[in-house]
Image 1: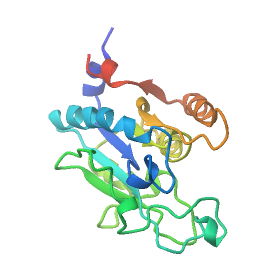
Image 2: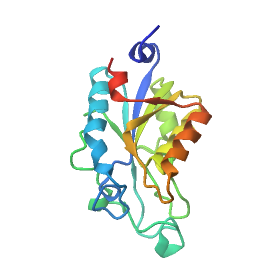
Image 3: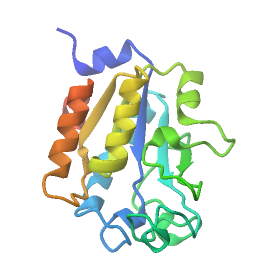
Image 4: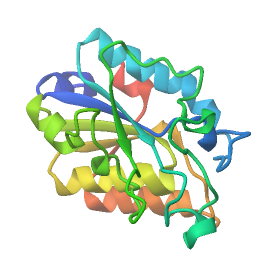
Length: 203
């Protein structure tokens, strides 16, 4: 039986790091409990992918100061990850590889954007197109938060036929309602995603 790593080598594989930003970590405007604890694990994934010269993408919430996404303007969330602010910066201990591609989402003040597939590169290229250009047909997805942006990214990857694996050890949920994260994981699995950890992947 082939190992996870052997299967991955048979495909073109990418890592998607979702929204590991200051505002989603303890002390931030929309903190995910223990969100900062995933950073060392995410870094291990980044190094593992970089060693194999596989693509690494990092999404970020990148909101304007006024958007319907925010509670102050009719949305569900407190103000967070405003473009150019410290809260919108990646966590200071996040170690992205030199070739990592940053994609930004949430810039349209009239729409919500949870999935990294709603993000674009600095050249305006959507994530799906950027993955296609690199021949990617399998993605590993982790970050913040399990029950919102990570889930939305994984479900979009399923719809696009990208064979997603949810990185359970490199994700945390905000759990606005109790057990939201557990329900999110169940939904991802029903949609066809796999669950992965760095310990299994590195075998």
